[in-house]
Figure 1: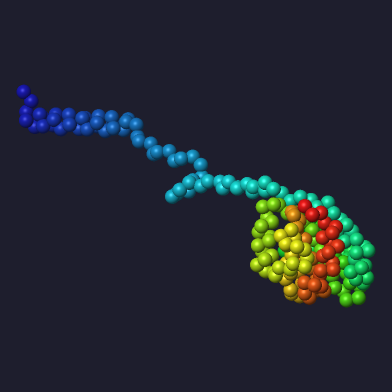
Figure 2: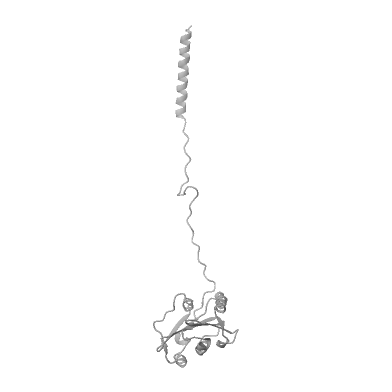
Length: 205
């Protein structure tokens, strides 16, 4: 029989071989793979998204072209009867942000006549705006200006006048909106002789 010393040596060798085998088995086991990160360019703390443009709705009731020229809004004879010093202003263009510019943008007509003596300009613009806009235009006129019954009989004709560096007239009749503006309009009566022929030339509805 082997001695005690030999048995101890055999046990030690056997234990060592067992440890080596266990380590070998451990090394062959598949290692855990890190979880795949989501594809894309999401930043930590949340995902990114591409903004979607909101379409601008098309008005259901667009403006109606007035189909008038400046010579039809106010004829040469009517202009001469009002004041023979006035003639067409060839370099005229409505100012940005003005009511006349809004009328031009709404497929209306914007006209101007120049006083050859004083240099004063009279602007007259006519539009048939979207029906949905008329009430707002009237509310703005009555808020900023005073009603003037001499331009026509209410409620068929609603007239307003706002004094200022250039007096401003607004008239509503049927679906039409008429704006007249000039430094020559100090008070409502100054524009009345001009508004009469203009209203006679613009269709009633």
